[in-house]
Length: 417
Image 1: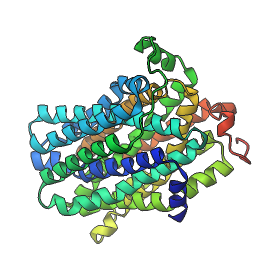
Image 2: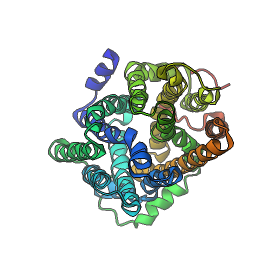
Image 3: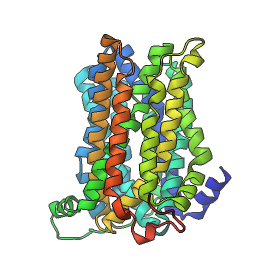
Image 4: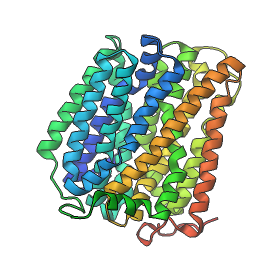
């Protein structure tokens, strides 16, 4: 934790504001996320497969709205960050107010579009501001997200006793406060295409014609399918085991504590021993094998004992994600080579959105089938195989260290196996 604080203080003010913003946004969303699937299934009575569609639409619309990153490149990163916070507040408010399926779908789409505005601009701003220390910057960024993972569910625990609506409205208040803070404190910088007469479609064509980037982004989509299980598949598994919410909070507490304690040191170790491609392949493998405990015969005993496979799965998923995410964000920025970087992050969001849709739909369908067929290990086996296949594809894409530009090559890195 001391190493993380030192890293945090070593960055400039704009990066520090972005770090704090990431904490706040994650707190606002993670107050809501652990209880959303449960609220839809048990509070409103939506079928599990429909919940999978509702939650998948958020990820899909986040990726489909590719123009978010392009607008950030052209009108600046700060306006898009603020707009994303405001629109995200609207989406959370809709979840608080409405219970009919069409409105829930609309809320999911609005929340996804808000992320499409916010996430590429946020990442592009950080990559632009800290281009010389981009891996370390995204490592601290990841720690901040996990800090929000820790405190978001903890704040949600007392609020959920007053009902899901109270949780949602508190998230709205936090997001509105963050929008005001960004407006007042975050310095404005111009995007790389500000004032350009080049048509918008030319930005997309540039990203979509970058074959190394497309190959990389396509192989990474499975990582999002696996990561999203922390907010979908695993909470439903906990509800099935315990019938309550306490175990859901433990998912995020474990992930947050691991991130706070290990993220910076783990990335430093990975940079020293592996190339970025090697670290990402190994991270995907770790995330894939995380589902093995879920495929073992169920444990018997107290609730905490029966929840152990889920908690071990969440912990292992978190470690794999910690190995993967900072290198992934840095690799995208380097493959963009300083041009229309917001568009590149948006295209990556598009493919990750497909990953989220695929992961949620596969796990929802497999969960339904597993209950009917008595094959409880089915969804987890599918996810594990998907992750291992993605790791093998990423290894192929990174042959001859193609994803390691000179400025990302770690000193003393081991030779590729």
